[in-house]
Image (cartoon, rainbow, N blue to C red; front, side, top):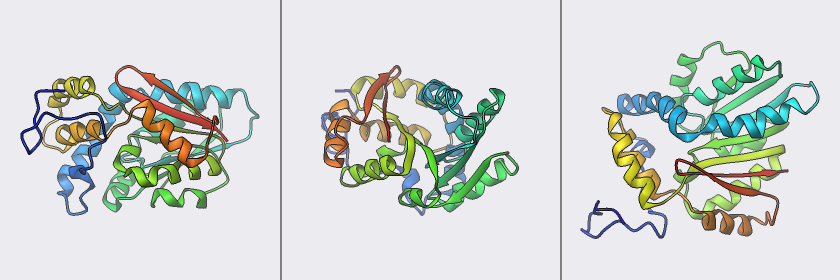
Length: 244
């Protein structure tokens, strides 16, 4: 438990996922605040989400062991596209052929990402729901960073099934561990992000985050059996990935 209180005055409970929503998920939220939040995600992702370590090991290194043909990755909920841009440039630096399709369900964020990266080689940005991921094939890899926690429990097994069916090589999920320690840490770190939704939504995101047991239950419902692995990375990252 932390000393923060929920609206009823009781201490926060991290045993189960919080059913509330994030401010940025409101279609009527302030656009200036929303896009400032998206811009701030670039440094949050860089310093906290550990995506570079994850993608280097599970995508870039894997590409280096494969044929020299061009491979295709879909990034679900790509936001401002800082991760796809890094991934494309790192692949190019290593002499690997990769293209990325970035999907996001908010038209305002998509327009913002296109303005930020108008001519990035290999990057295509679409306004699309993640349920359309199988329409952009053939797809070798599917990745989503801090996306799954926005979804209700009931739809997550279906998303895992679709990722597993659509990616011909590997699918990866990077998200937040739900714990009082993660929440307490973000109470300090998150205060650097002002005039946006980042601080408040970061706390909400952690309360909507996951445990290893959560992911195991989703995988069982999805029928994935043992075709996946779950790892935890400091600080408070949980990664689920599988080979198709």
